[in-house]
Image 1 (cartoon, rainbow, N blue to C red):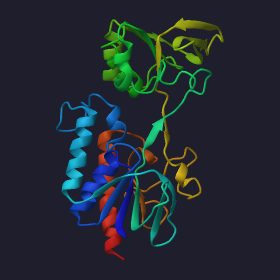
Image 2 (image 1 turned 120 degrees about the vertical axis):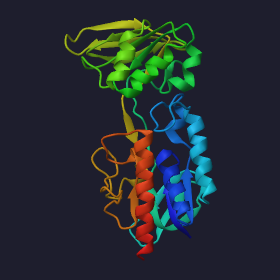
Image 3 (image 1 turned 180 degrees about the vertical axis):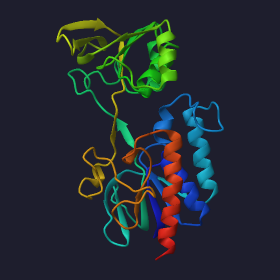
Image 4 (image 1 turned 45 degrees about the vertical axis):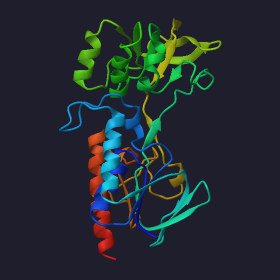
Length: 303
C-alpha cells in the first residue's frame, strides 16, 4: 500500500514525486516509457528558470535523480485501468499487477496528434516523424516539411535547419501562433519558407516519402510539393484513455482540476499537460506537480 501513486513520469510526475518524497510520503511514480516524458524528445531547453540551456534528456535525468534522492520509487509499466471512487485507489497494470494507494496524481501527459491523412501511417518512420530532435539527423541535405504554426512547429523547424537543405512550414492559417521570439527567428532564417492557409491532404511516396499533396483552404486549389520528410506538430491528445469512464475529463479528454490540482474525485489530483490548462510548458508542469504533491500531502494528513 502506497500513500501516493503518481501516474506519469514527465516533469509534472517527477516534480510531484520529489515533493511527495520530501514530505515523507511512500510514493510510487509509474510511466510506460522513459522518465522525463516529452522532455526526452526535446534537444534544447532554454526557458527553464535558472538553467539558461540544457538538453531535454539531461533535465529529465536531473529531475529523476532529485526525485529518487528523496525516496520516491519509479516503476516502468503501462496502466490498464484505475478505480478511483473508493478511499483506497486501485491501479491495474497491463501485466496484471495491481497496486493500491490512498491518493493518486494523474500526470500522464499528452502525445502528438495525427493529421489523419492517407500515407501518414504507411510512411511512419520512413519520412513521417513527430520528433525533429529524434530524427532530424536522418535528413541531412534533404528538403523537409513541417506542419503546424505553434511553438513546437517553429522550434523544431528551426532545429531542422541544422541538417536539412530547406524547411517549409505549412500552416492552415495566415499567421503563426508561436511566441514572437520564435517567429522572428524563423522569418529571419534563410532556410525556412512558409506556405499559408494550406493543409496537407496526403503524404506520397514509394519506399519512403517523396512529396505531399496540399490544398489551399481559401481558393480550394491543390498542388504537390516535393519533400523527403514531413514533421507533424498539430497539437496533442491527452493520455487519458484509461480514465474515459471516470467523469474527470472535459470534452477534449483533459482532466479538470481546481487551482490546487484537485479533481472532483476525493483523493485524486492531476498535474501537467494532462490537465485542462492554458499553458503547457516544462516549468508549468513542474509547478503543477509541486502543487499536486502538497495538496495530496494535506489530504492524506486529514484522513
